[in-house]
Length: 365
Ligand code: KG4
Ligand code: ZN
Image 1 (tube, rainbow, N blue to C red):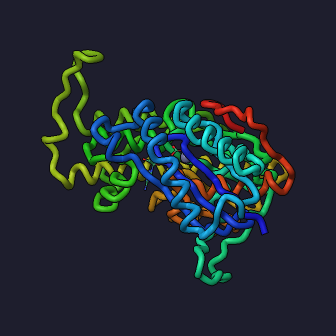
Image 2 (spheres, rainbow, N blue to C red; image 1 turned 90 degrees about the vertical axis):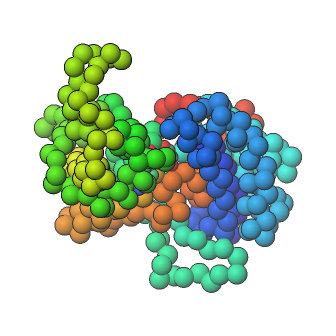
């Protein structure tokens, strides 16, 4: 049995989790900072790092306490060390190094994006609960096709294993979560934008507006969402006269009824999800033609919590007869269970970090 404590501080969630054998989540503590960033309608990096500093120790204590373990019971300390906001990452990386050094435990550095793709294998198993083997999602079957859709990524990976990934498609402008967040600002639905827009879209008519689904080239596996975002802006406010800050629009969001706003939200959601599923279909074909037909289709990242995307990906798997792996809601958004989970794979292969493990803002696999 291997017990790993994972830490996650790459953006605006301070999280710690204890995971057994890479998949059984014994505790999963997440302190969100939504109230601190709400008035800015987006994450302010400086505020995020300061809040991580305040939250990190209590969150670690709680994760250990809920799991009923002490530092000495652990086999390793893992931390998401790339990619993310540098000031935020540094808090988690420094905390993990301090714990590893003081408790004499190995340190493991985990890639946040790879961890999002491990999240679909995780199952809650808090102390005192018996393991529900019927609900156990089991490990991934490789080769797999991985899709990470979050605030920072819209990326498609060919996966030979949990840590051996090749990027085969990515966004050329906004990430899909970013497009959700920006559309949510235009539609004035509140913060955090993605989940609120998702909820509102369920009350609207997706056929009310024909918004663009950017496909790029015929064989392209890349995404583009900036045209969709602009289309939402023009649908809400009409076409502008003039440019930049001096542009005058025909109307404002306040001129629309609640139903009209819900209709635009639904049309946006339909276009965004269509674009994602169209690229997944192409990517599956691409892998099959390259002689590595995927045995599973796995998604992860904040937008994998989206109601329509979950349904559509499940349908795609059924149509193409590929096992679909979607994380439980608790493991879609940023969390430390996925970090401690993937760290198990590194632990098994003896892939430990030194105390000079860097925090790396950009780049991933
Ligand atoms: O993975 P995550 O917590 O952080 C990053 O690594 O970026 O993803 C956050 C993103 C945000 O853009 C948020 O708006 C989006 O995930 N999101 C959603 C939903 N829940 C979260 N987007 C669409 N529908 C949702 N239900
Ligand atoms: Zn993330």
